[in-house]
Image 1: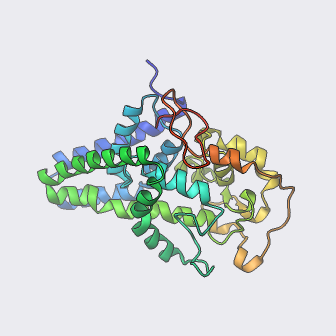
Image 2: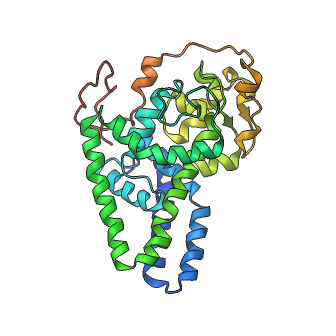
Length: 313
């Protein structure tokens, strides 16, 4: 029986299940708290991988069945600290919909007066505001918010079981890493977008063709392509980037694991070098924000915006 939407997701899911097995084996069979702490640090150093998998999963769900996707997200919560459907609400319906509008983006990199936030300020403010933003955005999508709340209770109940069994091990393996891991996810978002020109999709994201960066991040180095077609599967982003790269100014592209090596800074350089930038169908882009559709019931319209197809996540 086919369970995956895309064959390319078999390896990422195997990584997620392997990390879970390490967590469970450590929790139940390792007695030394020093050893538990050492394993936690090792997993924390590896956390960018499940973090990227979690992000990509919320754009294109891994499995064909919604229940399997939710259960998978409970596991990802234990590995990244991000609750089921939180990315869908905060990231897809918030950041992707409004990343060119700093006054509406739930993860803005500008202060209200237009100054560029420092990296540390962005990371801390974003971490503190993440779940308040989930509820603010979610009020516009009550059915989606209801499902988020339901699965948040389930996820926290699973975490509570570990805490009841062994509070110290649960603190070391699950609780303490969670805020650090999603701060890391936010930090990467800062480097992908901060101090760029939001006048165009082609100038609002940094891109890297670094093989290592894209291996770890699931091709998120091709970030302009990801924002322009957020429903496209992560395995398709290199080809999409190749089609778009001639329209992306050179200052937004580099070949380094460090996005900071992309040279352009809007506050310093002003308007980016002109390219043959084609107009974007923003209505179609907005319609592509939600995860790719599955055979399911249609969500109700919200205001003037309607989902592009029946979908389940």
